Each structure stands twice: as C-alpha cells, then as structure tokens.
Amino acid sequence: MSPRTGFRSAFRRWRADRPFWGGVLLALGGAEVLLTMKASVKVMLHAGMQGLAGYLLPTLMVLLGLLILFNPAQRLFYSVTGVLVALGSWLTSNLGGFFVGLLLGVVGSCLAFGWLPDEEPRRWRRRRPRREKGVAATVGQEAGEPA
Image (cartoon, rainbow, N blue to C red; front, top):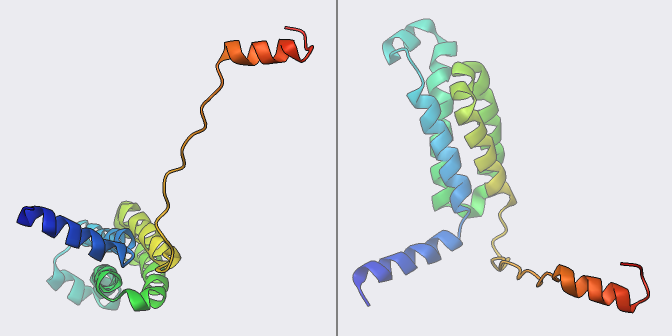
C-alpha cells in the first residue's frame, strides 16, 4: 500500500464526517465575490461602511465555509448565517459577484444545512432490466389483447 493510497482513504473518511461540498461551495462563493471587487481597499475605506461591507461580507463567507469544514457540529448556525451573508452580498458586492458567488454561497449553505451526520451514504439504485419490445408484445398477445 503506497502512502498516496493511505492519504486518499484518510481524506475520504475525513470528508465523509462533515458537510464537505457545502463548506467548499460557500468558501468558493466568498472567494469569487472577493475576486470580482474592482476598487482597492483604500478607496473602500474612504467610501465608508457601504464600501467596507463589500469586503467584509465575502470574507465572512469564506470564513463560514471553512468553519463548516472544520467544525461540523455547528453547521446549522454557520449555514444559516452563510445564507444571510450571501444574500447580503447581492447589495454590497457587485450583485453578489455577478450572481455567481451569491449562488455558490446559497447552494453551499443549503447543502451544509441539509447534511445529516448519522445517515449512511446512499447507494445508487440498480435499474430494473427493461423489457424488450418483442417480449412485451408476446405477453400482451397471450393475454388476449390486440397487437
């Protein structure tokens, strides 16, 4: 067994114990909103609280995403706060990073809120074998139905 395989299985176990994709999407949404900001921090501080909120809310989104990943016991509080902050970024940060960061933040928060820690992972359902047309036609003719 190579060290890479051991790391991969340890990462999978770690990832299964927390709302991984919810935290990642929320953090990515905050990072995207931060990257779409055009003005420098000096200009935003001069503009006042409205300009400062443009940097504060996406930073909180990134922080909440990381907190969801590393402290999943408090995921309900973090995810509700994450939705509110993501929706607030619509007003303060270029329409929430041109809606991309806003949507990533809301979807990530919803995934984190809906994550159930005690539930077994779902398995893909096996599809039932489909009947072929010839078999269905033969069965229908035997029952007395017209072809």
